[in-house]
Structure formats: structure tokens, C-alpha cells
Image 1 (cartoon, rainbow, N blue to C red):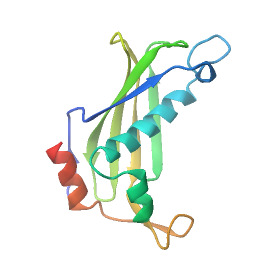
Image 2: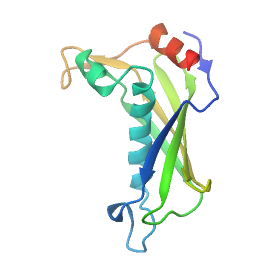
Image 3: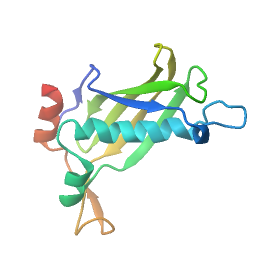
Image 4: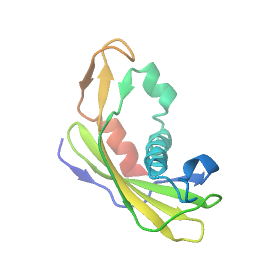
Length: 145
């Protein structure tokens, strides 16, 4: 499959900075952004019908193989935010999801990307996982979004 590029925001994942998300200075602790981006990716796929429940039932997986995050502005406990996610590109067996984290006032807090591969477990989670070509049905759902 040739690489397909997408540009528009297709999902928004709401979040709020909680006490446990902060470091001792009261500023958001960096792993929180990665947790939010992961949850936003799953929400993005659920939005086109590939829920975690469906993927588990069909023995599908999308393991993370690369992630990065650029911190732009500090966030503090109580800040309401959203992660805006979009498919940046689909390749043969992998795809890249771009994320932008914004505070409710529009201030950009962070941005990042995840690279994931599409795969299937031989006999369910915990068994051998092998990479598969991204199904046309899946990429078509994102094109239509």
C-alpha cells in the first residue's frame, strides 16, 4: 500500500491535570503527556469503529514502536486540556499519529507523534504477534472522517 497522508484533526480527547499528574513543583510530570497521547490514539480509532473491545475480540493490536513529545508551555494542577489527534500518515504496516495538547484557553502545552504498527495475535493477546498490512477498510474510514 502506498503512503497516505492526512491533515485534518479527526478526534479530540478531553483531559484535566490531576494532583498525581504533577511533579513536586506542581507542574505536569512529562509521562502524563504520553499517557494522554496513548489514550487519545485509542479514542481516535474507537471513533471510526475500532474500539479496544473490538480489537481484542478480533486479536488485533497496534503496538507503539516510537513516541516523542515536545513540551511547549507548563501546565498545572486543575488545568483542563484536550488532546487533538490526527493520522499524519499510513504506510504499509505502520502509521503515525500526531497529537497536540492544548489548555482550554487555547495555549499549546505540548505536541508529539506516535508511530505504531498494525498487527494480529496468533491466538489472542499473549500469543505471537505479527505485523499485518493496514486494511483498506481502516484507511477508508479515516479518509471519510
